[in-house]
Length: 119
Image (cartoon, rainbow, N blue to C red; front, side, top):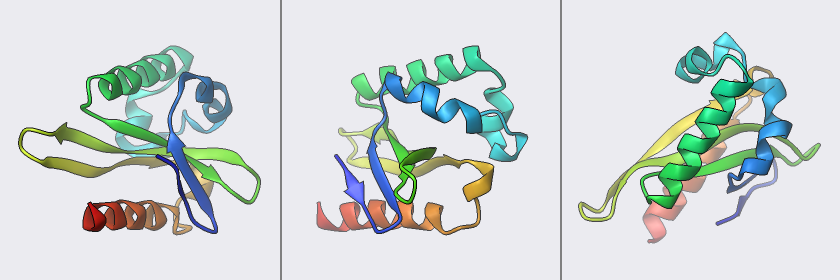
């Protein structure tokens, strides 16, 4: 799944994204994510958790890419997916400090809402 607006592109997260997103990953301003991911080993563990949960169809993580300069600026995902109960959570988003308050998060949620309303 690839989602795109004039500002951001969302595409499935993969292990190769770890290097390009590491530089914005260790800020305490990232809330719960920042409290858990404080170094490279934590980031590797987080990526492995996301990708393992994707294989188990429990999460669907997407990397957020700024189209202006083609750099990753965060991660968002569908979470707590339950096909049996036909539910999922949207959100689970963290965005690099420089891009917080710029409307990126709202753009991501609009994508999710569009998907929810059309499926």
